Image (cartoon, rainbow, N blue to C red; front, side):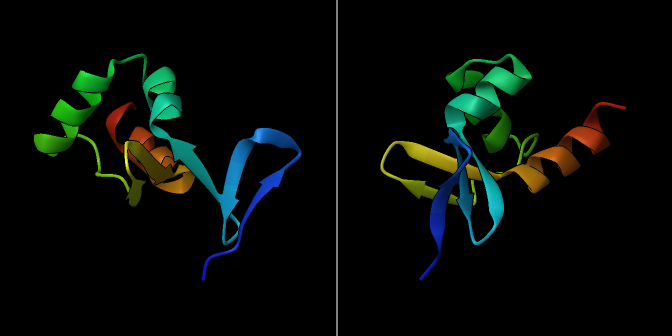
Length: 73
């Protein structure tokens, strides 16, 4: 079972000591809409979420940072 806890800022989520980004955070960081995010995922432009619970999708921040470094030089 994963260890989920909040650290300092209650809006930051860590699971197994990995920072997690929610869909809304990814959208805000990239400056894109929900439909654009899911279109990018369908087209293979952006990685799919590592987990999803209902309408809430999650990405590891490390994966986001790696993607950003490769696509926005």
